[in-house]
Image (tube, rainbow, N blue to C red; front, side, top):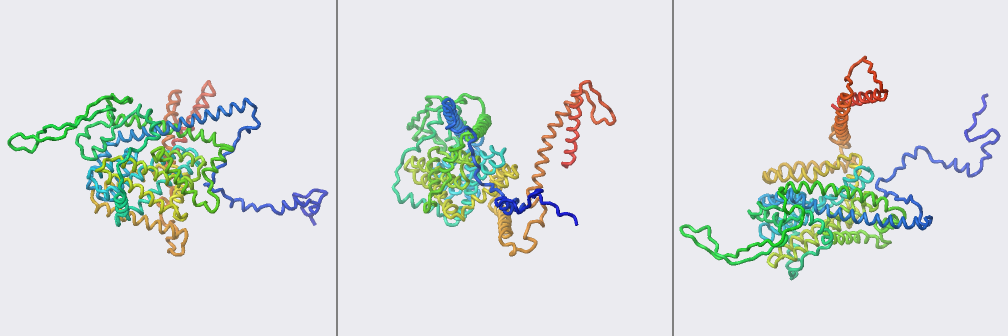
Length: 633
């Protein structure tokens, strides 16, 4: 009989019984190999920001001084980049107003289209996208309501649209972290959680408002219940710091957009670029010739206001001969460059600073809940903090764009960024309320009512999508979109283009054709989308309720239910573009060296062996490009 083979843990003179107890225990408790694949990391776990430097106690006096100076320098740089970031957002808003401000005023003149609630919603989105400022578009709406050109009920959908349009800025900001898959997943989810809140709120509250008019009735009751007197202008908090820089670059006359919207024919010929910063208005009573006299001249007494220019502005474009469009495009390119550069540098600085004990402290402050039984208060405190910070910076876009990189690098959880974004929605309405209270007495009621509509719209959305954890759908939807865009990063650009540009433009075009065309096109599309959502939910939770053919989407072509074929198309197109550029460079290099292309059975000799290797490599690259071009078709 052949001897029994020895166990790998046995030795020549020592049987297994002589193994010590800890060794036998470790062998018996070894995990099965098959369970290793079951352990997966949660993609939404917060990354650990570890301090890889030397501890403070291990530093000498010189090292401690250098560390303090380094931290101080980083703080100064961080504040400087934040300042430039806020200023670039302000200039970006001015650039968009120069490019599309007059078009926005013309859009608001379409009163027949504005009577359609869905068209009003889309117009509010488009105008806010054109001017990149919800406060500007809201002020136009307030002016039109005050002057009687718009009814309060007609203006409500427009206010809802401005709420959606202002959320695109932080979505653009998230795109700056597209290079890192994990950071981009968190940043894009942190930005789009604001989008989904606004979309879902409109989806529920717009039909409710059309059916019942509860926002108009509620705000009208509040305005009539209180004897509200005209107040002060909205306080300029952050603008005191940023205006010296931004006003040295560009100043705009925003009354031109309002004048176009109000139907002033002279406003269309005016430039948005402000030339005279100090003027004096002199109103006198004069005889004015009447235009409706038939046979003889006649006059009437009217108040004539004459504007006297006193002092010119000091910005760069005060004496320019360029058009508003040209100046806007210049400012748009420069502000986007500064914006992206500041964001990248801010993220790098935060990554280097938020380590060790600093990261622990910030994570505890931002992401830790209050102890039981007050844990439920944490989110509401975050809402108050978001409202307060937005009131200080006077822009929800600035605040949400500032927290988006923090979500990306893992300092703020998505669950905490959500209530902060909700608070920013409330904070931006308080500024509008203060601005409305500065209106003249005869316009105060309508102005304040529209501002309150904006406030109660956001409060109603918070009641719908925050108090009960089950109803916090924006968080789950943002996570799903974050995972999708992390896998297919090109989908993020498609999301922005479709949701904020193509969809509003299509709906606006259909609105111009009439409400019958709008309903006839959109109702079937909405019905199909609702059916797809219901089938997806049943496939996931109750597949037995569905017929066998609908338990999966495999009966459809792959391109109709998966992004994988589209991803291959995008990848091939990108590769072809890159390859074409590379092939052109290779061909030029080959021509310059005097070689001939695609000659078989010919031995090419060079005195320089390095040159020979370069030509062979160039030919190999050219051949591979040709193969890629052929296979891409």
